[in-house]
Image (cartoon, rainbow, N blue to C red):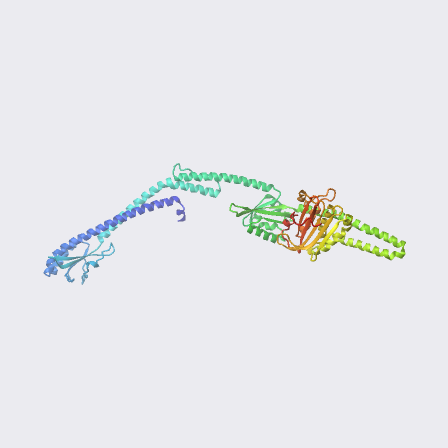
Length: 618
């Protein structure tokens, strides 16, 4: 049944047959109904005439009360084979005489009915009835009542049905012949067009074409338009395949691992480098199979962040390890961006995994190198700081030997010098005896120690130091790394200033400049040195970039920024080289707890906003 309705040709045949049959049936029914109506009317008219004749013949029997004569007169209806009963009734409605075609024993005459009670319905009631008054000398002397069957009409109706059946068969044959002709003209081109469309849809072969009908009608226009559409699709499909092949070639040639996922986050394509690195197959990786090569310790975090990106349409960026074919893990920077349609809806994701293992090792080597360089600079400063007390100590011991009477006084001064050496040593050990985990660190105390450590150098340059150290400046962090941060900035400030410079150091509780407005501690170190130019400001946090010509290797501020990021803090700088008001100010924000991570990658990038104020050393 469903296959029948799926065929245009069969539908056209059915419609043609139905239309022909409907027209024939309607015409035949109308003709037969009219003919039957005329036949019924003629039959009733004949009976009326016969009734009038018989009634006239029954006047004498009625007048002379001779029922037998009336019965003989009624017997004339034997010639009318459809009359089943004919009776004559007196004016009062009493039965007078009758005729039955098939009279049974003790058969009683029917009760006379009035004309208003007669309902001769079309072929439904049998027999029909006729009531007619018998009038003599303008006076009703009786009534004739006739019942007759409808066999004549039924036989006529049956013959009409037979004729209708023959007409229907002939019309159906004619309709089928017309349908076959219409199939060649209408349905066959449409069927061929449908077959071509089915072939294109199944095989994705846009090179096939529908066969033209050779006519100049609407179907020909439809076929030509379809072929033109196929040509345009073929052109676009060829261009798309070329671009896709170019993309795959490009994606397979890049050093990164590349992949694509649908709008719901399920991957459906990886480049060759992914399979080369992971040693997997497409069947394993499709959908969510990539989870098998991710580090199980960070997989829940990756899934949670990836789910947020898929739901919100925001780009995904994260660093985590991926297992290689040998079973070892390497660090990868994973970035995925959404691809949208012209309505702005995400249709797929394109992502890359960049191996940054060697980069991180190089960064770690740079950190160690800078720490070694800082150690050398610090060792020179410490040697200079300790050398003076040691010289004083040697002189005091010599004087104590030469003047025993004043030995106690000399030994007391020598003890003070030893305490000074111990203080310098204690601050120095704080750089290298660092904690393995974050601990509570009082930044004000560390700042005091840093100033004490570089006290001789500050005195030598006659630098005026202004410090503002507030209470409640504890944060969670690594003491040695915080000392390294402050020491780098204080050293840079001292190197940037000439004699009689001004150095400002402020440590105060504060709120974060932007983002989540976290609570923490802000350290501001400002000097009135030579300042940093705009061109230099763009690169001061890059490794191996230095503003000092013959001093340092350019890793100090780079390491400082990395250590600040490690503490989930932010660092900002402002500087000017204007004559008379030159100087530089660094401001560092440390959150109270390292766990308060708030976009460290974006907020710690050495911003150059109007905070802090360079004029602080005044």
